Amino acid sequence: MDLDWSPDDLAFRDEVRRFLNEKLTDDLRRAGRLATSVYPDHEASMRWQEILHAQGWAAPAWPVKYGGCRWSLTQHYIFGRECTLAGAPNLSPMGIRMVSHAIMAFGTDEQRDYFLPRILTGEVFFCQGYSEPEAGSDLASLNMQAVDDGADLVVTGSKIWTTHATEANWIFALVRTSRQAKKQQGITFVLIDMRTPGIEIRPLVMTSGEQVQNQVFFDQVRVPKTNVLGAVDDGWTVAKYLLNFERGGGAAAPALQVMAEELAQAALSQTDPNGEGALIDDPAFAAKLADARIRADVLEILEYRTLALVSSGKDPGPAASTIKILGTELSQALTELALEAAGPRGRAYQPHATMPGGPIVDYAAPADGFVSGDDWQAVASLRYFNDRAGSIYAGSNEIQRNIIAKATLGL
Image 1 (cartoon, one colour):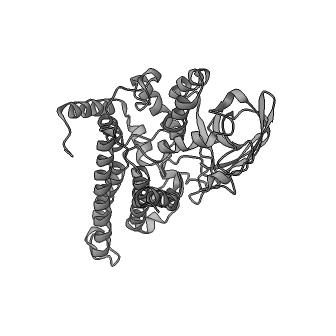
Image 2 (cartoon, rainbow, N blue to C red):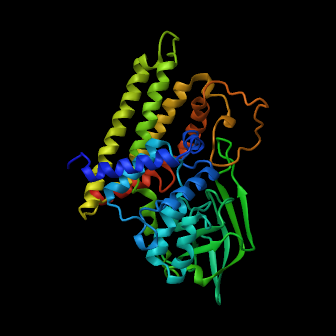
Image 3 (cartoon, one colour):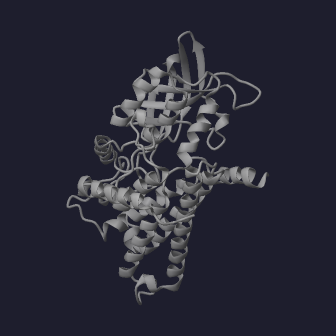
């Protein structure tokens, strides 16, 4: 595998850099830099999506006929990498990166015509209704019931850990439409208007103090059968297809490499535990940071290898699961190091110095906006708490290891 970009790839990279330098404003870069989780400030994310949409780059992975770009897989990777290196805020993945592909593959012409253009503009903003209080990683155990009632399904039950439910106007959800011998059967994939009567949202306060996740309750909510994606009782097929887009396909390594480099720079100005020199010179800290930087480079090579396989038309196998495990566990290690480097100021709760992905509850910022230390120290503690979920969401890393064991070792 040749790790050098071709002249065409380099020209494309330069085009992307020019666009980012022109359009990525200081306030948008700040939103990316001060994000406390994978979900940045919602308004900043939507403004960045609007700018990308005007350029025709909001959903480059979509087919061209739906508004995507005629890019090679290498160009897709370069674009994601350059956006990360430039500090662009993330876009919400639920619409553009996830349910849109399921709509393209399983939707009717009417569903595609309605949802896809509106997802691009942000007029339709989706949240995900998968997990339930008794169905998380074992998603096939879900119980939210949908009863057939003529032209509608009547939905009753609840979903939990629903990111940005308070911002979303649509939710894609898995519901139980029948009980069959195999629990994966009898599940239906539906698109539900969040403005429908009978829906109640109860925000969940995370350990970081943010309200990004929610529990959503459905009480006799009527969903037109025209909002079923795929076939009734065959939603598991749609869900499995969608999970391929949730777990892989992006460039995770650049963000982790940037995090490690920024951490190294910060450690130059922080003192070691004995107060005798720079933290970067402390052997224990330096060893952990070196290990993390090596792991980030290994992850980048794995992403390149996966890109090469897909570009040549080959099946990458369980690579998405491998990348998910390595990426989330490395991110957790780096946030632990960041909290260590931040020292006592990192332990101060200062969300007003950050740009979280949701409201902070029961917190009053200082009237004068005082921040003890630097912004990155305030961000460190919130990122640490939020990143604990990385090895659980999108299928826990234990589930991913089972997938690898089955696909690679035949266990």
